[in-house]
Length: 156
Figure 1 (tube, rainbow, N blue to C red):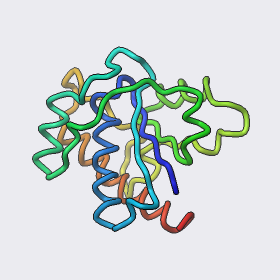
Figure 2: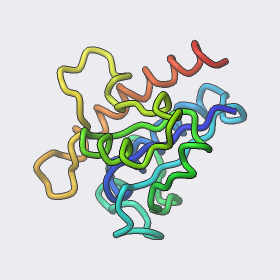
Figure 3: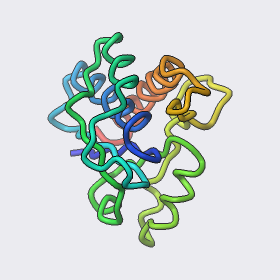
């Protein structure tokens, strides 16, 4: 089993969207028996809450349901449970590195490192409206396809 964790700041916008998109790709590829997904946030502000309604609506427009997901905070045990830990932005990566146990650094990746042909490195946070939820979903869909290809080539 390959275990994949998506991480953003609060686990209500970007990381649950990424989990939902990737979970959908994995299921459509018939690989949900060998690839598992989860998401978390570096902060615990929204622990136990469902994804932002705007994230849910945007995902639903593309046939992806994320309303079943609940926010949780990232913790040190995640580095022992997950093979891939994907940060949405540089601050998330800095925060992840700060709690990463020695010898587990190889699990850390930027989400958009798996995207094809994008000129950006970070998935912007749509929470305050500077970036649209559709734009974020476009970035995540691109990177998710690349991530799935990578996992299949490297692990299955």
